[in-house]
Image (spheres, rainbow, N blue to C red):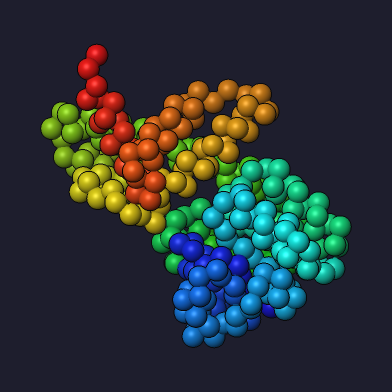
Length: 293
């Protein structure tokens, strides 16, 4: 099976590298040349454009930064779907909105190709170590065909249902990540105020009901106040929680905790930490706490 990979960012580079390690016949395209060169040196081929890549492979995987980029790469006049053929499988690993996933599914079906929304979770380390979760929506036969490819990149590969189900599952995950990041930051602020070492607090929480993945990963960063540039930047949560809150408005359900978390995440970005680590939410809380009553 010939596989193409578009988007070699924080996640995509590790994912593509694991495909090469797994013996996959791989063609890549990336806007930034050096990252593509890195994979070509390891045995990949390079395409000159998404359109050229699509014409050379059986499966196209893309891991892109945001909704506009995903829509351009998949739905643009020089994009993947415009150049797709019957029987091809097209996969979007990005976190997007439900409408984008469904639009891509419908457009691919007109070309007799299959589109899978297959967002990922696990961060750059999960991408590097092939331990990610991959949540997949779309046609089940297409999922079954491409599952061996997914399993070279992720440890937990799940079919969630029809088109949009993978995207919905990722949004559920990101809702919990965003709220838990903010809850962990509040807990660490309390620890600081009470004179409790944050790493010690995290050690106790690991054996207590207050344990969470966000407590575990944010504690050492928060204790060191090492909030600058990060592979898990605040801008990602600004995007994701925005999609989630917008979806709640369109579908008519209440998300009070998510809306408060959205405010804190946006405040953190506005403090100049858009590229900083998500645990920098502590700084927004500290700024709020410094205000006079």
